[in-house]
Image (cartoon, rainbow, N blue to C red; front, side, top):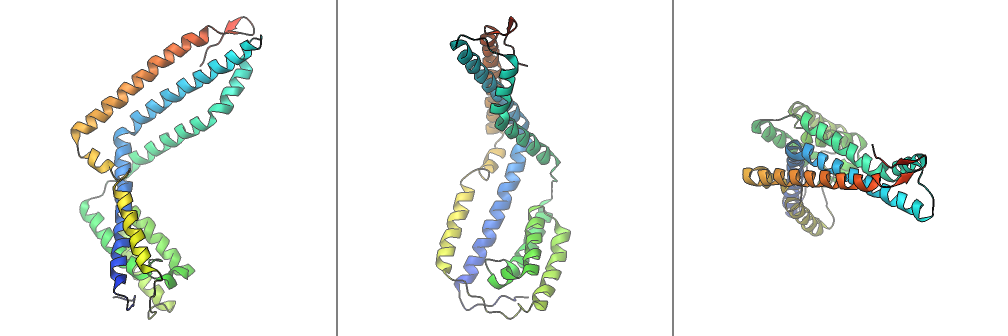
Length: 258
């Protein structure tokens, strides 16, 4: 059932490019999930050790600035300073932990399921993809169906995609979109831009993680590198502790970080 009508021969090329772009975007997301599953916990530990060092360096700078004024640092003032200046780092850390949890919970799908999802998605896209059928994109009800299709495609939700294809076909009939002539302005520029977008996706992370995840040697090297970095931060943290212990605080105590 081919409802989209156009006399422009470049339309088919543009359609294929858009679908290709959507597929590589999806693959990039899958590679990212697999990458986080493989390295996420260790990367998070490295970042956590890094921000601990940052916190201690900021504490040293704070204490030194107070001492330079001929005063003794106050523990409560130091704590308030650290909480204010480290908030962004801890938010990043929490985001990383959340991403790790989501990646671990992600479902693994068979190749057959992924292929069938792709098949149904392409059929839906040819009918109501807003870039291929601008009139459909302007229709609120049809646009809602498209958004559901995009989400189901990303989640490899085969059942939803199968059901949506039938619903979409009925919807475009009901909305009078069945016999529209499609005209895509500046299609040559759109083709060029889409090709560039695809090239950019496949040549940058997270898509490039796919090659790493297929190379056992490189994966081991990556883990070794992260572990080495983690140990370096731990050693540096101990050195910073010694510096902090040398700062006198109000109440005849020394500066110690929890």
